[in-house]
Length: 65
View 1 (cartoon, rainbow, N blue to C red):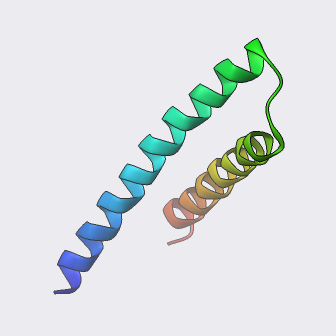
View 2: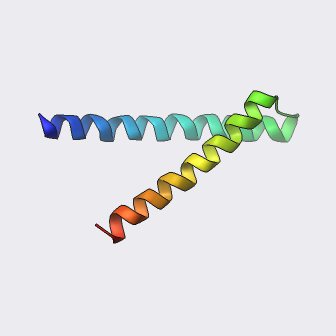
């Protein structure tokens, strides 16, 4: 049962990364064409911070485990 939970967690992380990358690309294109709304700009920043935190946690997991 624990293995199933880990597989589901890995799949959910993959889906979140893929969907947020598509949304980030969409926001990036829109930003080049026109000004982003407050919500869109907030999401743009939050996605960037989330990618940085995910990368740091992945590096910590790889090198200090």
